[in-house]
Each structure stands twice: as structure tokens, then as C-alpha cells.
Length: 305
Ligand SMILES: Cc1cc2nc3c(=O)[nH]c(=O)nc-3n(C[C@H](O)[C@H](O)[C@H](O)COP(=O)(O)OP(=O)(O)OC[C@H]3O[C@@H](n4cnc5c(N)ncnc54)[C@H](O)[C@@H]3O)c2cc1C
Image 1 (cartoon, protein in one colour):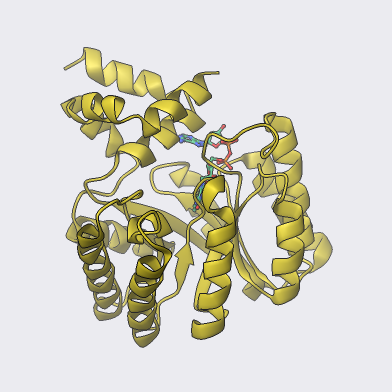
Image 2 (cartoon, rainbow, N blue to C red):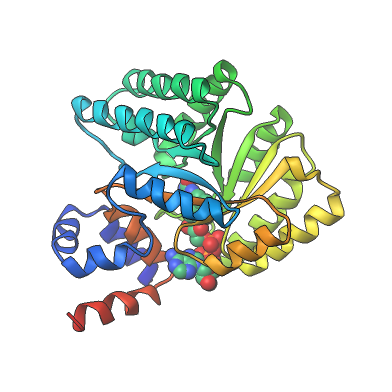
């Protein structure tokens, strides 16, 4: 119930205006966001790299409604790719299609994406297309397939959400194609006919899909902080004999940092998703929704101002 309410607030403009106006919200958001500038994100990436953690940098933003606003998004991604190469960071990048103008016109979004992917290919950096809510699932998969055919299977990946009922069928096809897939549980508000409403069903699906995908020619990014999912993945890795070059673990910046280090020390490739930028509100609210206990952290900060 609380999760659904917070997810509703994450898309409400009036709530965004109120929350982003609070200095305390900005301070609390810093737990999950590396900063507002590319310099701050690069500094965070360097620290993570020295801990033997790879990163994926994400310039925060989504649902852009003016074509001219996407120009700055593309140039920030290109600058990011240049910095990754110049500073020899162990980093990929992640992006959202609605940040590149998908709500305005698919052509605009694809033109923007091609500019970023061309620069990424020149710099030798991989790109993952994040998955947004269900109105975008089909389009995202279609654009992903077109781009990976143009730029290469190892250079472009996308995301599948275990809470969606359709995901098993999607992954069957993507696995046969050898796709680079990040498997996460899913972070948006969805109707029960599209997504499993119960956490137990989402978890069971996540563990099942992990084991199934590890047996395909595809590459799997196991993106979760859930200890039960991590352990299920470790036993599926053992039982399927999946080669280490076929999978990695991924977690979000600021969540279970000690566990990130443990997995890296155990010899796994671990990648931390590092978001930055001024448009932190929807991302931050989705993190609150995943763990309403984080609201106490927020409330404590608010009352101790
Ligand atoms: C690298 C990465 C990329 C992602 N990309 C996408 C994407 O493209 N599209 C999409 O829909 N979703 C994405 N997500 C978010 C994902 O869908 C989940 O919403 C999120 O990861 C929480 O699910 P969980 O697997 O960690 O399990 P949960 O069952 O939500 O959490 C398990 C445990 O993890 C810890 N935990 C989880 N979340 C938090 C938090 N916010 N604060 C503190 N502790 C927490 C808690 O201990 C919790 O009990 C991504 C997640 C990761 C890790």
C-alpha cells in the first residue's frame, strides 16, 4: 500500500515541487545519487573502481517533453563517454529512452541514441537501455534489437523486469538471440494483470528466470540487493556451470555497499549503478518505495533540521 502511494507521488508534479523544495530531501537523496555534476559522478566512479567495483553511469532524467531539452542530454552522455575513456574508468553507461525524447517522437529518440552509441563505440564503452514502465516495454525491446544489430550484441544491452508476467517469454527469445540482459525485479507502479502484485511471486520468478537465462548464450547482469536472490543466483551459477564471462552482479549506488565489496572479493564481477544529475526526484522516490523504512531516514533528517 505504502509502496503504491510513494510510486504515485513519484510521478505527481505537485509532490515533486514540494519534495524538491526541501533541503533535507536533497541531503537524503545524496545517499542514492552521486551528485548533480559529471565531475561528482566521475569522482564516485573512481572511488568505486579502487574498491574493484565496475560502474555504470546514469545521467538522471526521464519523460522529457521538449525536443530542445534532449540536446543537452546527448551532449552530457557524449562528455561522459569521453571522460570514461580519458580517465580509463571501468565503466559502462545506462540511459532511459524517455530521457532521449521517446515521448516526443520515436525518430528523435533513435537519432539521439545513435549519436550516443556511435560515440560509445568509438570510446569502447558499453551502453544499457534501462527499462521504464509497461507503456514503453515493446518499444524499448524493438529499439534495443535494432541498435544491437547495428552496434553489436556486446555493446548494447537492455533490461527485463521479473515482476512482469510477460518476462519469461521475452527472456526465452532474448536468450536464444544471445542478448546482453540486466534482470531486475522492476521499480514502477503496474496493474495486476501485467505484473505480479505479490513479492513472493516476483521473487520466485526472479530466481527462476536467473537460472533459465544462465543456460542460454546470453549475458546476464544479476541486478538485485535481495540476499535470497543473490544466493539463488550463486547456486544456479554452480549448477549450470555458467562461465564467469557470461554474467555479473549489479547493485545501486548507496545500497548494500558492504555486500558489493564481499561479492567482488569472492571473485565476481560487480557493477554499481551510479546516477547523477539535478533530476533526482523520481529515481529517489522509487528507492523510497522499495524500502519504506528509508522514510524514517528522511523523517529523521527533516525533524533534526
Ligand atoms: C543495477 C540496477 C539497475 C536497475 N535498473 C532498473 C531498470 O532499468 N528498470 C527498473 O524497473 N528497475 C531497475 N532497477 C530497480 C529494481 O527493479 C528494483 O526496484 C530494486 O533493485 C529493488 O529490488 P531488489 O531486487 O533489490 O529487491 P527488494 O525485494 O526490493 O529488496 C531486497 C532487499 O534489498 C535491500 N534494498 C532494496 N532496495 C533498497 C533501497 N532502496 N534502500 C535500501 N535497501 C534496499 C533491502 O535490504 C531489501 O530488503 C535496477 C536495479 C539495479 C540494482
